[in-house]
Length: 261
Image (cartoon, rainbow, N blue to C red; front, side, top):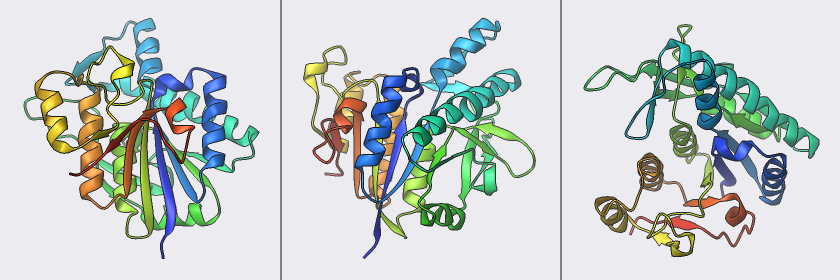
């Protein structure tokens, strides 16, 4: 029988508050078995970029990263937020280790090829060092990944945090029974994006396509949903999209469970 692994991706906007970090620590302690945390930080990176007079460019909810904004992303993701999160976990007796994809060569990416859009220094994942990750988990360490990877040739790359969480999950299904939680500021997928009482408790692919066609799913949620269905197709046991409050009710999670059928 495989051990349990829970991968939690938390949006950068949720890392602004110490009380939220405390809630996340409580959730980590509540969940049994192995845990991996993946975090973003786009809101803070945008804020600092704007202070520096750097233009923010997005295409279909995905960030275009030039060299200057890569520097900002690395400072915020791999520095400020990653270490704040680890410090909060250590305060709550959670043995954790802050990581980028470059550390231990854990996540290797390649610069996204230029086609219709040039995303700049954005990385698409090509390899995950599952042996090293298992070694960390066997030490009862909670790896805390930021959204920075590398190409193994000296170049750091900005990589979507949802995608990192998804591919960590799918690459580790040979060794663990994996649950994947996407934690954001909204309670889940909603029939009316402006009405939090319209939460949809289960979303299958057919319903997702309908909601997308009706423009009830905003651009920022589309990559998350695509990742969620990819995870299910690739043997992840359970996938949820929720806010932190909904996840804190674990194991009776309040949010949107993503289903294949």
